[in-house]
Length: 359
Image: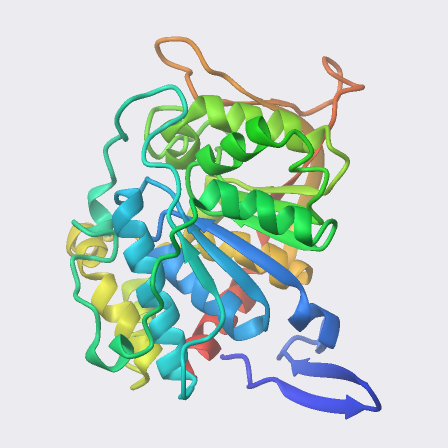
């Protein structure tokens, strides 16, 4: 099953997009022009799942105003190069005459309290995108990395568009923590903040209890979760566990990567390292960041969410970067809360991914 192409119905000066799903309980989803015109900044360490998430944002939203790099799946410098490549893939797939207006900025090169960046997961390959090289068809669309640092750019954009920007963070939270330290109203001036990170049941994918993004810079994770949740804006956290549960089989992966389109070929190319690492072990193919992007773009596909107080442990031999969650509101009843996404309508999420890759 796949999600049909969006059908646009223009009524006077407004546009409603009708999406039909094969679901008797939810056969129609409506999106307005305002959904497509929302202003988005994506902060990313530019790995495989980041790439698909960003392609989805560029496809579904006309106003992705900035992509900012951070260390994580690769170096911040390489992540910025990868972000340019992703923009090129989008422009080539859309058969644009020139590159789109999305700007790319390089951000933090190491954690806020460290002098070097942590180890990257080998599944993203030596350059974050499976060790693959830039496609020839994308090269003429590649934007240049802007001279301005990502943190300065984020602050400038947030000041310019107060209350209008949805910021989604797909990597370690260092850029956001630095932005808050430099400009204390940074989170207050956002429209919303979406985060892929943390482990709500302490099922760590990096340490025994911690997810990679938070484990890469626990101090920044603590600053961002505490300051953003206290700012009054919606703070939506998509942890590791629902993403892992929503992985797909390798036969499904084969279907997605043989659709004959530029985006489909791109996914196959960048997934080489993960496929080599996981396929023989019968581990599922996972695109964790896609679920955070879906929570932003298609919130109706979040099946279960809860408001809870969350804090991040920054000390200890075993529990550093662990998410401490007050599930019953007994310990910190008056503390600010985040919106924690615990389950998605998985089949619909992968329908959206397939439709993206078919285009």
